[in-house]
Every structure is written in C-alpha cells, then in structure tokens.
Length: 114
Image: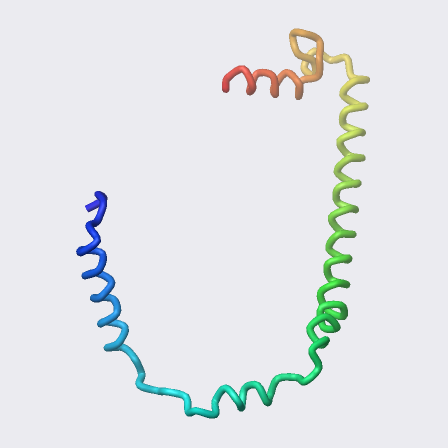
C-alpha cells in the first residue's frame, strides 16, 4: 500500500480519524468567559518578554559563546602543536611515501576512495 491514494480513499481515512477523535473527546468545553480570564491574568506590560529575555537568555547565550570560543582556541592551539611536532619529526611512520604529513596522506587516500 505504498502507491498513491485516491482522493476518495484519503477522504474516507480522514473521516475515520475525525470519528475516532470525536469518540475520545472528554466533553469538556470552556465557558464563554474563559478567554477573558486568561487575558486578565497576563501581565499588562508588553515589554516584559524583552526584559525577561535580556535578563535570562542573553547572559546564558554569552556564556555559551565564550565557552565555545575557549574550546575552539584550545583545539586550535592543540592542533598547531601537533602539526609543529609532526613537521619536526623525521620518523618514517609520521610521513607518507610522498614525504608529506601522515594526516594529509590519510585524507588524500580517503578522497581517492570517494
């Protein structure tokens, strides 16, 4: 049944879903003044959402960005040290047959397979 459904079949299935949802309805309906009570409980000041975001979300976002920046710097320094030590090393295991870095050799080999 992975083929296309006819409009009549889709309409029949939609009606079946609607009937099953109606059968599960709890029968609870809000009174006419429900929306008025909800609106009355909302804060009167329209700017409260901006103030809340500035007090709560902005500091957390700045802290998260700072953590990411420190992690990126630490990773970059670690990579720089690894590259520097690899270029100073003259062992045969650290160089490829072409004489370049082993990581470059691995990446070139992976690109050739694709």
